[in-house]
Image (spheres, rainbow over the protein chains, first blue to last red):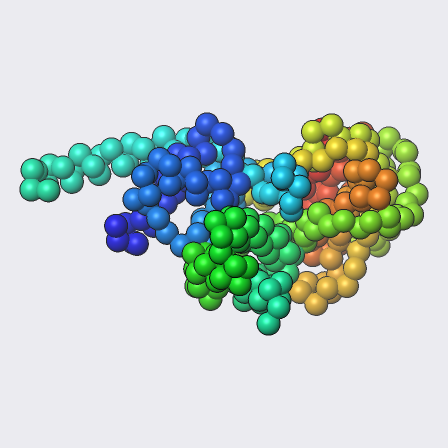
Length: 109
Length: 215
C-alpha cells in the first residue's frame, strides 16, 4: 500500500485500535498488525508524532504507568470523549469514501 | 561506539528541536520502544549490535522523525507547557519542604513568593487540566500513588519575555528510596495566582487556568 494512503488513514487506524482498551506504543503496533494481517505496516517511529498530535487535539488521553516487566515507565494512550466522536465521524467518512470508490471502480479490481 | 551511546545519539537526533520541556518525555517514550524491540530481536537470536540496527531501521530515519515530531509539538495549541515529567529515580534525595497545611492560600506571582504544601494522598493519580483562553480544555493523567507534595517557585528562563517562568514541582515517594517528581512550567506574566485548596492546586491568570488534582 502506498505510504500516502496509509498516512491518510492513520488517525482512523489509531483511534480504532484504542477504541476498547488503552495501549502503549508497541502494543498499538501489535494490535494494528494483528487486525490488518500485516498489510498496514509503516516505520514504527511514525506512530509517535501522530499520537502526540492527537493528544494535543484532545482526542487521546495519556497516562504514564510502570512497566509490568520492570522496565522503564510506559505511556499509555486511551480515547477521550472527543476522540470517540472523532472516530465515529471518521468511520462514516471512510464508509462514504469506500462506497464512492466501489462505485467508481466497479468490478475492475 | 558503545551500545547505549548509539541509541542515545539516535534519540537526541530524533528529538532535536523539540521544546526542552517536552523532549525528556519524548526521549523516554521512544527509548522504551527501541529497547523493547531490541530485546525482542535478541530473544530471536540476533546479537545485540545487530538487534539495535534492526530496531532503528524499523523505527525509521531519525531526521524524518524529528521533522514530524516538531510539527506535532510546535504547531498545536500550546497554552501551558509541560516542563518535564522526568519520572526519574531520585534515590534517597531528601526534599526539604515546609509542609504548609493551610487549607487555602493565595499567592500573587507578581512579586513571586514561593509556596509549598501537600495535596494529600493520591490513590489513582494526578489529573492535570488545562483550561485555555479560547475555552478548550485539555486533560492529562499521571498514574501516581502516595502523598503528593508540591512546591511553586519562579526561575530565570531565556525563553520567556519576562525572563522568568513559574514552576510547579510535584513530588511523591514510592518506597523509601524511590522519590519521583513531575514539573510544569509557564512563562511568568505577573498576573498569576496560585490557589491551593484541599487536593487541588490551581494556577490561574487572565482567562487561562491550570489545575492539578490528586485523585
